[in-house]
Image (cartoon, rainbow, N blue to C red):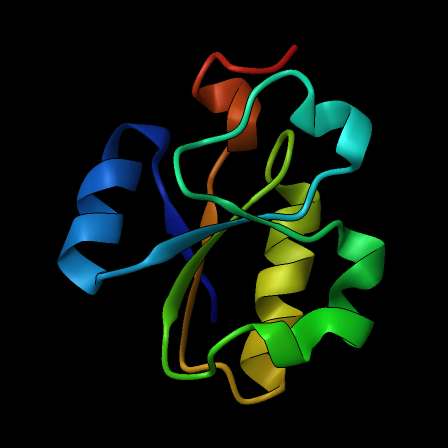
Length: 98
């Protein structure tokens, strides 16, 4: 089961887990703003670019509203990535995307 991190807790989750934000939105969405130091790999590119991600790293997966990121977090977890969480409500919950 994938952990859903509340928007208010995203920074503490990253700090507590020495995690990285994985922003899986589309490039046109990144133009609206990206969280600091986020790795940007759109959802459709995840299967071919997974090798760029460290399986030992903790990832907080982010999309616009939390649906796509939950799918990607589940996919990564099923493929051997240790600690993966979903940002509940996505960038909308942070007030950074409509």
